[in-house]
Image (tube, rainbow, N blue to C red; front, side, top):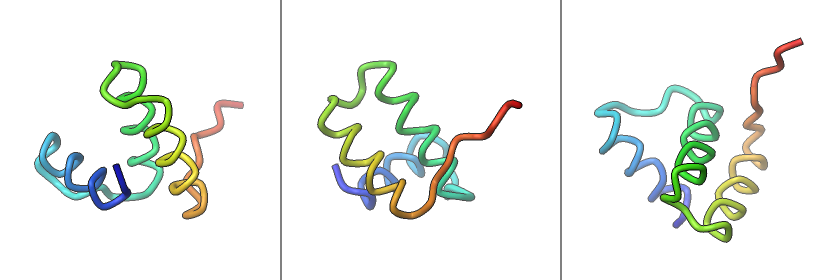
Length: 60
């Protein structure tokens, strides 16, 4: 799955556009945890989002 496919899946499930790449990162991680993505898909999407400066929030 490419980033475009991820965005389309997000839109389909949430009925809206993602507001930020960080939101897509959360969506990818949730999808992987629930077994909706393979490890290969997860890694590819994670690195693609990382290149777009997606980050998880810091809970310091």
